[in-house]
Structure formats: C-alpha cells, structure tokens
Image 1 (cartoon, each protein chain N blue to C red):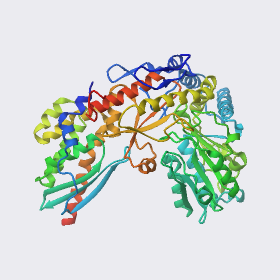
Image 2: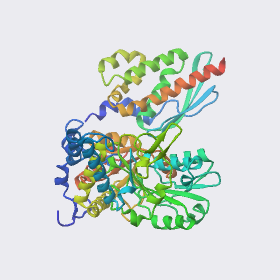
Image 3: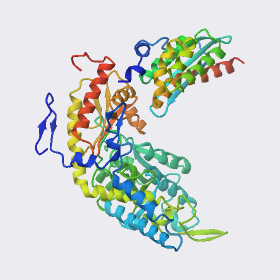
Length: 442
Length: 150
C-alpha cells in the first residue's frame, strides 16, 4: 500500500503503513493457527502479552542445545560460553534503551523490578552498611504515583508506605484520559522521596509528558521511576533523554519470552541501594557472621538467572531494531488513528481515553452501550478475535471513568487494517446478537 | 457459531428481566462478593425462617452470565432448606465442571430447572467463575445467617 485509501462505506483513512504486515506475520508461527472452528487468529491482546517471532524461539533453543550452563559459575567451557552469551545479551538490551551495560538488572518482569526498588528503599532503613541508607524511606516521607498506574506500579508503593509509615500521594486524571498536572507542584514536594509514573497507560493508551514531572522531582530531590512496560515495546525510549532514575519493562510484552524483565537504574543510585533478594551470585564474601555484596548489577541478581530467556529477549530486541522503533511507533499510530475512526462510526461505542492520536499509543479501551465487556469479548472471541476484557489491572482507572470494566484492543507490529476491520465488524455483530441496535443499523 | 450454545434464550431472558433483584428487608446476613479478575460484583442478602430460605435479595453488576445466574438461582432456592439449597449449588458446580458434556446436563435437569441452561458455559473456563459467583455468595451468606441464628 503506497497511498492513503478509504474503506468502502467508511470515512476512516488507511494511511500507508511503514511495516510490511504480511512479511512480519510470516515470522510469527502462532499467527498461522486458527481458533474457534477454523477462524483466522486476530490477536489484539499484545498489551497483555505479545506473540513471539521465530528468531526469539530459535535463540532460546540455540542456547539450550549448544551452551546451556549456569553463568558466572564454573570454569568449564560451557560455563564460559553461557556467561559470554548472557552478558552479550545484557549489552544488546542496554544499547536498545541507550543505557550503560552495568545499569541493566535482569528480573522476572516489570512487577518484580518495581518490587525490587520498593523493597530496597525499605531495606535501606535497617541496612547495617551506612552507604546503603542514603535513600531510606520512613515516616514523614512521601511517595507519589498517579491514578493511571497499573496495579504493579501502585500496590508495591502502597505496601512500601504501610511498611515504613510513609504517605502515598497521587496525581489524578482529566476527563479525557490524561494526567491532571495542575497540582504537580504541591503533590510533589520537599517530602517526596520517589515519583513512580507510567510512560504509557496500559488501559487508556495515554503517553504521559514525563519532562515536567521529572523536572519537578529534580527540584525537590526525589527519585523517579518510569514504568515502561507499555512504552519500551512500542516507541523509541532512551534513558539519557528520559532523565529518570529507574526504568522498568517486561520481556514478554516486547516479543520476548516470559520470565524476564529489566530494571534499568542510574549507576550511582543502584550502587547506593541494598539488595532485595539475597543468596548466590550476588555476594562478595560470605562468613557465618555476615556477608558483603557485589556491585550492581550482580547485587540484584540472586540465584542462577533466567539465562535462556535473557538471550531470547536480546533476540527480540534485535528483531525490533531491524524493524526500527520509529517505524514501529508510526505503524501503531496509523493503526490507532484508523481504529479510533472506525469505532467512532459505531453507535453506542465509547472510547475510554484520549479521543485522538496526540500523545497516544495503540491501546484502545471502549465500552459498548447495553453490553457488558465480558459479553463483547465473548462474541469477538467467537469470531477469532482476541481482546482483553475487565479492569486491566488498573481498577482505579475504570472506577474513575464510572464503568465496571472495558474491552481493550492493543496493536503491535503484526497488526494490520484487516484486524481492525474485523474488530469493528465484530462489535457490530455483538450489538446484533444482544439486540441493542436495530438489525438494519448493525 | 457456538455463541448460541452458551447464550441460551433462557439465560438472555433472565439477564434482561432478572427475578428477585433488589435488596430487601428483613435479612440475617449480607455478603459482598467480587470477581477480582474482571471486577464483577454482587451484594446478596439471605432471610431465613427457621432453616428455610424465605428470601434471597441482591444487587450486582456484571456480565450477562453472572447476572442471569443469580436470577436463575433465586428461582431455585426460595422455599428450600439451607441444606437443600446448598445441595442444588453442588449440582450446579457439577454442571460447571462438565466441560459441555450433554449427559451431565441431562441428569441434572430436574434438580436445576432453568439453571441447566448454563451447561454451555462449562465449555468456556474463563466464564465458569461468572456463573458461580452468586452461588458462592449464597453459600457464604447462608452459613452466616445460620450462624447468626445460633
């Protein structure tokens, strides 16, 4: 497709897509299977977890078939090669986000990365090493989040406050699905120890203007943690431009395996934090009376790591780099514009979140008047369309917008206009099935 | 199209015109149950006369399956003893575990009346909890109501 076309019977515009959808689909084995009695799989749930290209699966298999050994232990050849492959993968992933290699810590997922920081901040208060107490959180301190956060970037901070006696504060939302920054200067203040904010909402699709928040946090000397679970897979993210202290993301949402996530931290900050999980790999010297710990990133990687998954994630990063993150972002923006237009044409459909593509990613939540989101999802599933239904692990957001739940479609590199047409047709079918529109209108 | 197998006309009727909906007095126990994966919720009250369920009243929000299930349950349990009602609940649980096996539904037709229409739901593991939520709430509320009596 080289020029913008309109779909017959619709005003929605199909701009040329930067990515070759058919070629990309051929890289994903799962997209060739059928579901629900022979229907093509229309996978619009990448926001929950992404599908994996063959190169990622091959990388994991390559590791197990050729080099499998525990990295950073043993002196045999396999141990050397496994260590080399693991550390090379760390460099690849660091380069992807513009980071120093020794600032990248591997965790299980974004959730664990956030918990790592939250527990390090409360462990700091009781650390026997004075150098680990610099960022201790306690009574009188404040932690700031937003009402837009995924439970993973909310509950660990609630728990940190309960453990330490600190106070949780938050920035609210505007009616059109954006952060309400009108009280930023009072919510983020001299008592604030850390601001935790998502770069892109998993439910609203909103891309947040982090510059002002980071600047305010700097003024008051607070740390900033950015939840990149929904941004790093979908747009170029460079930690040197971000200005934050921490960035977290999950491998499985960016074409990589499950079981591997990343915590990026500014080196001097990581170096001043006590460990979260302790045990093998992360120690320097162990005596019965006590132990000392390795510098970052090893200090935060206790136990034999998820080596094959890390190598799979590096392969996912290389796949995304070949596509180009600018093109990935532009691709999803074109799809989002088209999807917003197509949904706007259906009577009774309301999008929860920004109504246009300005600072907005490819996650579209919506409600269909008269049909519960679960039932919408069920009718879509019957046509082979996989979407997410429910509160999307962001219960305060659905509560804020006065709906019990939403149906959510999320896009990625293999998504094409045909997928969005299938979604729009599917919604109309749901309306027909539940009799909420006259048959001739649906 | 397998949708009709799950969304039986009886289920859609209960969803559109729920039986016994609304919270009423008197009651001995009130419970609030949620389905944490989707946010569906039900508030349910039980009123006993002796050990007979004299009234079950409820308010809730949720999908068609969860809302129709509570309505069909209302029809089934009023006038039964708590023990009988819980037995019916066990039959409903058996139906939900049947993975769509029609012979299970056939055997339970007398015990479950309209609720046997939920047989199709048992083919969809993600929706079984929607159908079971009200039964779990009833079990909880009746135990509390009996406890309040003794």
